[in-house]
Image: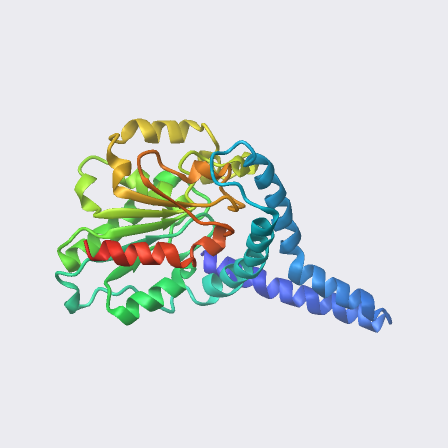
Length: 298
C-alpha cells in the first residue's frame, strides 16, 4: 500500500513540476519556471529546516552531546539528500528488490529481523539487505501495515518475522528496528513468552520516551509516540526491568524527528551517539550495521 502511495506522490510531483514549468515558459517567464521546479523539487528542504529549528530548541536542556552549527548544517544537508532517496526511490520502487533470505543453508546461522518505522516500508533497508544477501545472512524484513494504524496492530507482523527466522535458523535472531519500529518490537517483546525469542535488539532513532514532534500527530500510531502518552506508560509497565540490557540504542543530537535527543535512549540499554546525523540518514550510518555484524557472532 505505502509503495503505491509513494509512487503516486512521486509521479504527481514530477508531473506538477513539468506542468508549472511549461506554463511559465509559455508565458515568457523562464525565471518563474526555474523557481517553480526548484520549489517543487526542493521544498522538503524548507520543511526539514523547520524541524531542525524545533529540534535544536528542544535539545538545549538535553544531556546528549551538544550539536554545533556545523553538526546541524551537515545533518540537514545529509537529510535533504537522504529523504527523497528513501521516500521517492527505495520505498516506492525498490522495496521488493531484495527478497527475504531463508534458504536451506540458513540452519545454524544467526539470522536478522528488520523492522522499519513510521511511513516507511522494507525499502528503507535496501543497503542493508544487499549486504546481508551478499554475505548469505538469513533475514526477514517486514512491512508494517496498516500504515496509519495502531502500533499494537504490528504485533502479529513482528511475531511472524521472528518465527520465520527462528524456524529457518534454529536460533533467536538479532532484530534491528528504525524509529517507530523499535516501539513495535518492544510491544511484541512485552507479550508473555517472548523474552528469549530475541538474541539482541538494535534500535536506531526510536522514540523510546516519545518525541515532541508527535504533538502534531493525528494517526493512532503517531499519537502513541507523544511524550508521556498512555500507550508508552502501559508499555513500560508491561516490560521486565532488565529487558533493555539486551538492546543497543543509537540516538543523535541532530535527529530531526525524535527529540529531545535522549528520548531515543532506552534506560539500561547500551546507548551509542551518532553525531551530525539526521533521522532517515541514521539508517545508513555504518555504526548500526557494524553493531549488527558483531552481534551476529555472539
